[in-house]
Amino acid sequence: MSLLETLPVETTAQICEFLTTSDVARLSRASKSAYLMVQSPLYRCVRINSFESLARLVRSLNSPSPFAHNINRQILTMTISFDRLRQKQAPTPVLVSMYMKTLSRHFPAIEISLCFISALCRFSSVVNFGTAVFPRVTKITLFLGTHGADFNDPGFRPSPQQHCRPNASFWRPFLNGDSFPDLRSVKLHHYWARNPENSENILAQATTDYESIRNRYFHLSNRHGEEAEQLGPCFGLEKLQEIFLESVPELSPSLLGQILNNQVSKAHNLKKLDIRFCSLDADTLNFLLQQQIDSLTHFTLFVPASTYSPIGDSQAPHLCSQIVSFCKNLVYLKYLTSHICHDLFLSEQEKGILKETGLSAQLMDNSGEVDRHAIRQVLEEHRGKQARLRREQRLSESLAKARVDNPGIYASTLELELDQEEEKRKRLIAESKTPWRRSIIGLKGICGRDGRAAQWDELEELANMEEAGVEWVLTSCWNHKASRHSNGALEEAVEPYTEELHDHFVD
Image (cartoon, rainbow, N blue to C red; front, side, top):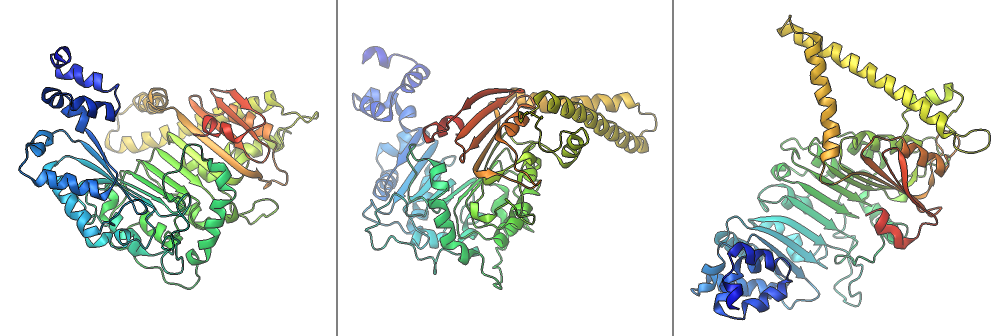
């Protein structure tokens, strides 16, 4: 141990990064000097998996022992998990709040992630969040579902008539800024009782279990004639950076509208928004996709197949074109829905140009094959022309506005500013730490809004013509195909598509 103990603290910390937490803990028990040497890597990120362990930690911190002094500046993050089915004592909100205050007093800069597993909506710690304050809790995760838990537990089954329904009181503690003053991330799982294993396949669940769960609560989320309860001020929205909602019956169209259009506070810092299989009607989804959230970089939307059925229904809601417009400046998009179509890639004007050239919306030649050369030539010419027209229009508007204050300004100055703005987006894509990606998953088929459903080959070819640097991943569950497209070319394709390849292509 003598050689290791003589190393600089920075070198020791780098060595410990290659060790597991249990290995570092065993090393700390080798000697007193070894214990002091590994303080930083040992306590930097702490995980507590029971209420009993949290209580012991708080008692140690409040005791006069040297333990509290030794780790006082070491702990940076702490993840605390409460599993209702595996612990002896159920924590009350007041007691958890008291422990959070103790931790924040000893570690003023700590970031706490609070996770409730197998909790249920009626679990006292969930129902009474609004009665206490939880300082330094920056992330909260609730697993309120039943999947994977012990169904023999008589107290585990949910009672949707009493608890699993839209209500504003469920959301207030997360949004009011009082109960969780430092909250930045909210994750609500109403299907899973605990974090699913990596082997679980979301597509298999999407067509069966998620739909049954969603339909079970649908009548509770869409009662006609009921007045929507008001959320009130949502001062906590300003700090939220991530919202994850999975099959949450407590969310209704009215409540989502109040969150997005809150009169007091806006989600100016929201970066990640993930909505999966929630009971939202088509009008609400359209409203969501019309919002301007400038800070948003990641967006996931899983639409229940029962929300709409586009085949042969001219009045059916359609989200493909809105999705593309909403996500134009996002780093990441994942969109799962029943049917997909041309509108992911073609505007109405572009489809009109194809009709004028004789290609129509069919995009096929006489032999039944995708006429790739003709499509690319027509679309590239049209898109280039539209880009020049938009540039000229913006330049004219900017010049007229600028000359009100500065009559002598030159058009070349504004042209340079436009060039810099156009290059900025290209640099953002090229220099991004994570690749820009659009992941599109169709469960049942291709939409037939134009009188004829497109062929899968057509969608693949259109994906090849998308913006350079943005990767497109298309997944077809009905004909078991998947493909990856980037920089104007098909990079990878799989047929038949299997569930085992889901993580490789989609996640």
